[in-house]
Image (cartoon, rainbow, N blue to C red; front, side):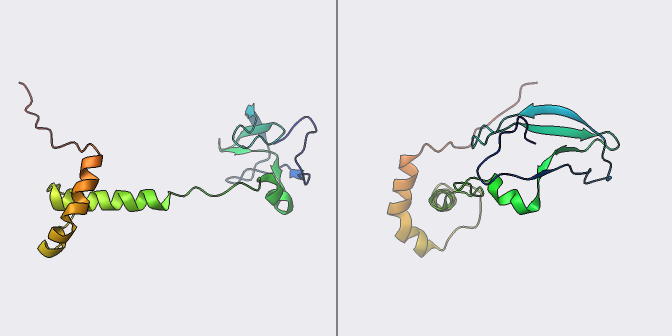
Length: 137
């Protein structure tokens, strides 16, 4: 995975690993590159198994040193909570006030009480209506 003797803080311990699918050791290097997202030092190689064709990174950090491979700022991908909530509200407003067939409408009293808030949300965004297409031919 890393070449040139450059190792990140904490010093990775690398190991050659066999193919996860067939267990073969023989592989050909397909490409080598740098970590452009986090700027980790070194080069990383992707190899393809000669037996089954599975691609993998090799060598890999040992399980004990794997944590040092990730910077402190590394976090799993997550949708922003406020964006998901806004999207849910917009969907609700479209169903209840623009008659989009995206789900079940709320009871009439709830629609009436929420109308001012929903209208503000729908005014701030451009909402495309249905487009009628009558094909030629």
